[in-house]
Image 1 (cartoon, one colour):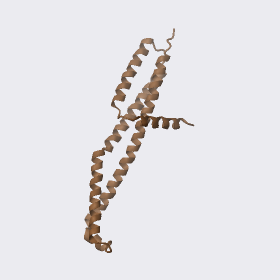
Image 2 (cartoon, helix red, strand yellow; image 1 turned 180 degrees about the vertical axis):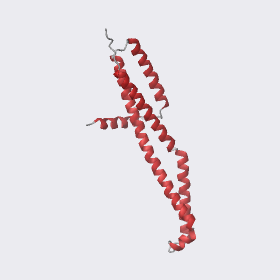
Image 3 (cartoon, one colour; image 1 turned 180 degrees about the horizontal axis):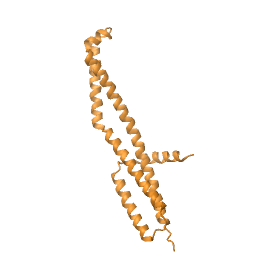
Image 4 (cartoon, helix red, strand yellow; image 1 turned 30 degrees about the horizontal axis):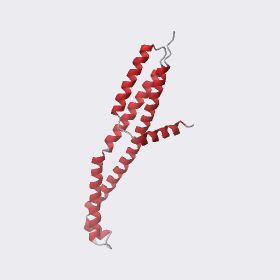
Length: 172
């Protein structure tokens, strides 16, 4: 007599849906963090480039070559603003640690993808005994709890946005 393991199938499908939403959340966060990191990198590069140019050529020579119609104090002020910009960009690089956040989000996407693959493997299994089903459900509960415990936190807004993104992806 075959055992009806529809309870296991329902539980696995529930975990799979949750994992897909979580993966979408972290994929969205990864994408936005990459954009912010890129903008910060470009800002740092541009400010450093101008600072290097000002430093190599010199404020007095720049004033004589390009800005002779302006007061030399204005050129010195522009130089000081660029120095402050480089400092601000550098502090932001250190404080925001966007590179580390990108790695955390990427690892979350990888872990959730692996979990979803495991769930697909479980759904493909046939002829499970009642004891096997109970053991699988307990293992899934433990794995899901440990996985969500190590993931970076997310808000309700992240959850709603991810559900909308998944709905858009599933449209033909």
